[in-house]
Image (cartoon, rainbow over all chains, first blue to last red; front, side, top):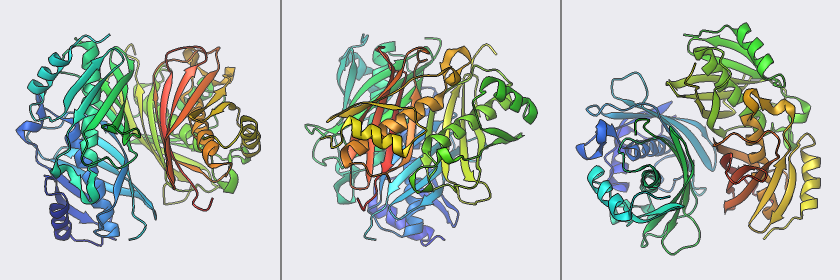
Length: 137
Length: 137
Length: 137
Length: 137
């Protein structure tokens, strides 16, 4: 069950990560959606979006999915992240990251993130990641 | 054998990735070193550096290590990256990424990156990544 | 579209991997299912199934999913595999591996595998893997 | 500092994993070496060794490296493993897995494993893995 609303999450992210440009689109019981608008500076030669842009989106998606469940505790930290880049994203569409948790344990959470160019069927990247959850929450 | 000098690589990165803040420290036959100066904006609550900063450093380190071998062709793209975060980096030291290639095949290159806070013994993160190499080079 | 029937795949696996104990359960357009019956010897202290048993299941699931699409060419080889172990499998139930491909390119295929104890909702492991596909097919 | 001798480790593995064919070659302060003799049944078409054989070797190498440090507690379990297959192993040489730990925390250990065909310079595979360590030890 999601314990945090979209607005609460957006306010939290803005306070904790003032520099992030990733936005929270949706929070539901079975997962979250975050988005990132691609800027000119993030495009690489050939109109490709740089890998780190998608890694960042995946990392934030995982973070939002976990905090949506455990509440807005700022101390969860990424312990690992693996990403496969599958296709070239569309330069003129937003990137959407959809995250579902596979496991939410006492000390470790694991989730997967599918990244799409908005409105496109085929995924552009897929990530799995692990977060360490603070015990004292 | 490294086929590109540090200055050539730095000029190439500046042209291809004008927004990158990662610098090329060294290029040698057995690997490369890149660096990133941490800014206030990249610190997370508790003085932690955000994961995407280190993922970006790892990605650039791999890219530089591959281009140092195959020459400055801009079309190599990341196909996968996996990172383990090991320790909290020092907020007031630069992050260094040392990359060695494990394999440089005709179509695929694989490398590993150790990330340290400058001057510290213990690594803060370790990444492995795969790049697809354009055939027509 | 799946190009190979379950019986053809089973016969191929038996010929190519005479020692495998993984069986092909289903081949459909959107993925495949393979199964593994746990033996006494594969149980670890505490009734846990050893990790390599699940890695093997994931690897075979990927292989079957790829060959179901490209046909029974024996030269596809794993280039990478990442697995997260999520929960303890049931010692007395078969392990099922469900694989869907994320990408089937000319030289590289990427897929994900969910592993469940048969009849259970929660996954016990999740893997992603990459296969190199021979060009000359 | 290694706290377990090679003979103690070998006896422990034989008791805990009676079916394993991986042997313990060396235990030192900075890492361990395990070995696996390839059998006919493990060869795939073209003389390639199957991926799961190397994944198993990597998993055991990690396990041995961790137990060498924390002592022979049987409850450490793999939480994740990532492997890159780099080159075709020699069919007629043993596989050696050399593991060093990157981090040995209170609840999580992370290590890397290089796999070589015995006597060959170039690695055939590289793995990183994470083990969860029981708290009550």
